[in-house]
Image (cartoon, rainbow, N blue to C red):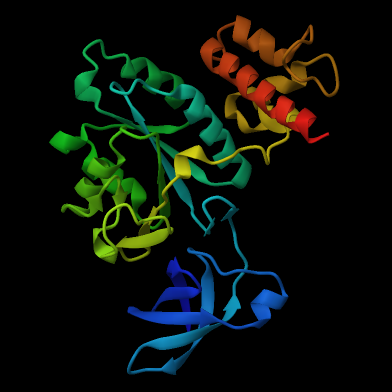
Length: 293
């Protein structure tokens, strides 16, 4: 029987298979092979006790995507929640996360929440910048349920992870999607009945058939140091078409003269503020690489 791991507590895995949830353990062979099952894994199981819905994991199918921290497999879409106001938009964090999603090959959706608080409507400029690059941007006011239906449509047939800094309104959005209060203390945790402040494990929640939301504590702080500084430009989607205009092979697009990407910034074809954030992220990655040696 084939299913998906929806929760992991210690070495017990809850697997959803054929509309049933089985409590499973993993075969010892995985330890020898140094593979650990993670939430999101597609697995083959053998039922050992039908009455008590116990089973054992026999095989972990090939992962299309794997994230080390938090441990999560096979997500297909990341929803980046950015607050229009209170707190102010953290576009440096957003650009890091978008680059990471490009790197692992996962679709990105940007949600600009709390639009009602942004009286100057600065969110419109943010939307314009990222829509021009090619990202889907949804405007929401979670408390008034504005944009919730549009967001629900985009979640369909995906394993979705929500990411965003504290206070941006992830919980209110997720409550709106489920149409009931499923969040507590900033994370989805009422359903697992383990009390407040105890949700540290990743868990998948089913919205409907083939549609899940991953509860991912700490996801907004993930580390992008897997990306090499010299490769970073590849994950800024709008940069790639201008790279061929660079004079030097191996151009870093930072200090070189006759750089196609820098010329595109000067000509207004690439947003200057986003290019400046690229330089900042490049510098951070470069410093980490130098510290390794």
